[in-house]
Length: 79
Image (tube, rainbow, N blue to C red; front, top):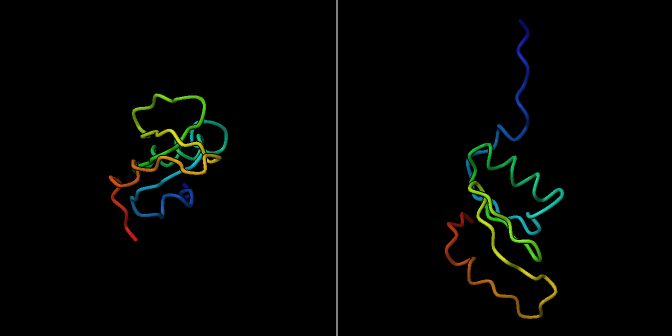
């Protein structure tokens, strides 16, 4: 049997990801794929709160001139 290469995401180390717009569309799909690979995923939503055990969602209105970003303090950032 011939061995196939795993998807490119398998080469990444387990990490924290912050995705703006993770409640729908491409952002939601990316959040689900990363969490399925055991990464810790934090996502934002604007209008539609999301309930998901694998992704931690937070409200964020990117059009707000002074958005509430206190939830970013608790993240374990690796810079």
